[in-house]
Amino acid sequence: MSELPDYVLDPNAVLKDANAAWRHGNPPDYSKTRAFYEQTKTKTHEPGSLPFLVENLVKNWEIEASFKTNLSDWRTVDHNVYTVSVNGGERRTGHHMLEVGTYNALLTASQFYDPAHNTFNDSHKSFKRMMPTFAWEVLEVYSGPPVVAFRWRHWGEMKQDYVGFNSSGEKVKVEAHGGPIDIEGVLVAKVNDKLQVESLDIWYDPMAMFRQISKEGQVSSEGSSGGCPFVQG
Image 1 (cartoon, rainbow, N blue to C red):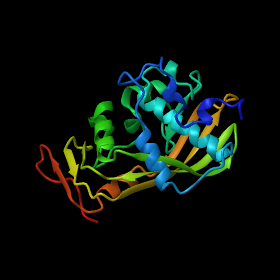
Image 2 (image 1 turned 90 degrees about the vertical axis):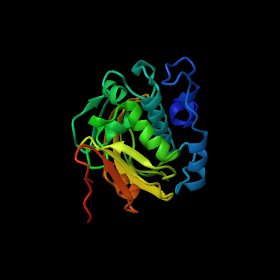
Image 3 (image 1 turned 180 degrees about the vertical axis):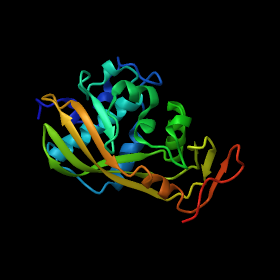
């Protein structure tokens, strides 16, 4: 295992990159998220197993994609070929994700949220304030390198109100219900011989999170129409 890169052995490996350009000047603090993960995860992967390595790779990729502002500092991807596609859509580069943010790159326009009406900073305020800890785990791995296919789970608790701008440009607010938000999906990652990501194909239901956010039905919006864009059913 000593021959493997640190970003597949330690979920916090890239947090130690002191010389990287970090979005807020310093590496972020993931201690609360890691503690929540340990308390509520459904899988415990054997150290050195394929699910263990894959889980650590993706966790380090998420840190870099969210908080490292220079693509050249990302150690988890092959800079020359790295792209991401969501639900079979257009392939996007790392520079695109740096510009719009991870949430905007992965979400689609809806009556709850629209990447076109939310900046990188807006998106992080909307989701990180609502759900301070958003843990992630690998559930099953179906194939090994160089094409790694696996099922994943992303979960947290709605501690604060959700506030964001929807596809009509209206500000939407959903009162916090304090309950769980739990989504799953499938990801296919192509990796090189250094286990760096060459491409990601992410498959999931973008509305799954919003259906759970609004499950109590306490939704309000404000905009030029003065009406609520939501329909019952």
